[in-house]
View (cartoon, rainbow, N blue to C red):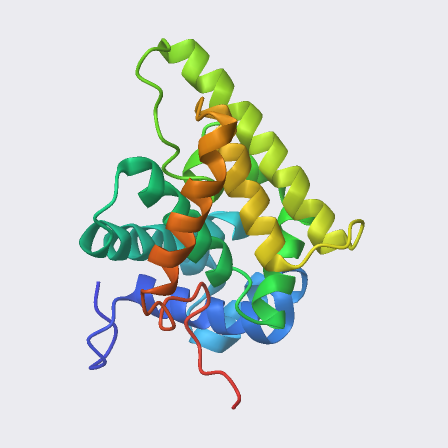
Length: 217
């Protein structure tokens, strides 16, 4: 359904208005009434497209995942493990590109468990984890769930200020854990990390951001 003469669908207008509010006011303070006032769409129509606020977050993260995955697939020639590490590097940078975006993600993690329901977790915050071919589906799932829990603990600790880590250090630890859980020998891990950093640094991902709004400065 298109809205007026803008060429944007009603759904797109809601998403755009919502991410502007997320950026300006944060996750907690962005209420459906505010989204309605911002977009000019009735609350009932917004609820039709997005029954809960967490559904809007999923759309934004899914869009980011697709953008990062396309960039990596098109530009990184190394093996799938390196591609995964580069993906992680860019993805986590994009969700912490500035203070409002980082605060937004922190609030989502802290406040809305519906975003993190089992079945969504791997798709939303840790995708696509490299499969291990010699493990069956159950063991692969268990491995992924363990990685996810460990990664989220790192991220929560970072945002809560419980440990003194820079964002770069958090990304390195995420990638180190990824390699370890995928059976990469300890002697090879540092080489993978360095290769991935070089590959990530060679890419221009400055336009890839979670909340696509105009930033001051």
